Every structure is written in C-alpha cells, then in structure tokens.
Length: 167
Image 1: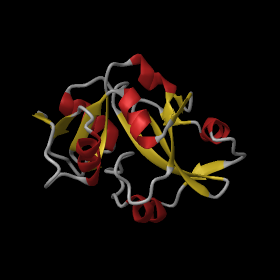
Image 2 (image 1 turned 45 degrees about the horizontal axis):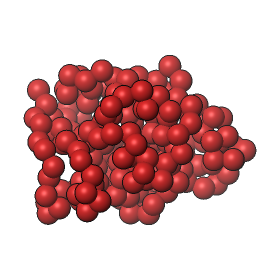
Image 3 (image 1 turned 180 degrees about the vertical axis):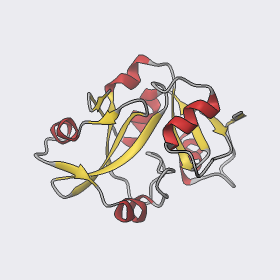
Image 4 (image 1 turned 60 degrees about the horizontal axis):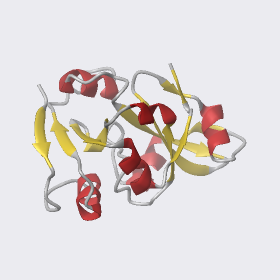
C-alpha cells in the first residue's frame, strides 16, 4: 500500500521534490516499497498506489538527432520515437544509452524524474496528460512518485505537449 505525504520540505527530499517546493508548486508524494523483482517500474507504481496506469507516467530519455531529450508517457503504453522526433522538429530518435541518461539526469534508471535533473533537458509530455487533473511521475528514486497537475509539470520542465505515446 502506498503511503501519502503532502508537500515535503526542501530538506531531505529528492532534487525533484526540492524543485517543486522551491517553485511553490502543489504536489503529493506517494511512497511505496519497491520490489526489485517486479518486471515494470511503472506498473509497480500504479499497482502500489492504486492509481490507473493511464495517470502514471514514465520518464524516458531518448536521443533526437544526437541531443538527449526527455519523453514523459503513460506507463500503460510505449513511446513513439518517430512522434517524439517530430515534436521537437527532429529527424531521428533512438533510446538513449542508460548510463548516459543516468549521468546526465543525476537519477538511476527506474527513478528518473522529469523534475530536478542535473542538466535540464528538453522535455516532451504526452498530450494525454491533459485529460487528467493530476498525474504521477517519478519523484527521483524507485518507490517514490509525485502527483501534480500536468500543467504544472509542463511549466516547470518547459515541456512541449504532443501525442508521443501509443498503446
């Protein structure tokens, strides 16, 4: 069962929650016990929180024409690389090397948050997010999610909204 916690203070949080607090953005933290044997980080988060998988979004890092780009898509679907490239006026997208994604964002795979990254990367949020009052994204470590309004996520990351996910 997920534990709910309202607004963490800026101390002791992850870079993502620190960024949210510093921006004065409303959010809720959901913590749960991460099972390393679970086959999908996103599905595990949705199950643990009791939230529909279409409201839980995964953060993926891809390379578009050689530039690292963050894609935020529902865990229930997959990333359409061609649509991601088009969303940032690129020609070709491929998934980034996991080590490069971790090094650049400052987060570990399965815990990469679109917020509070070591180096701010251009970000594309699947437009299905706007159908929900709030969505959940990684708060910066496995077993920790943050729930916030999609418009707040887009504003804080400078995200472009585009149809980049597919079921």
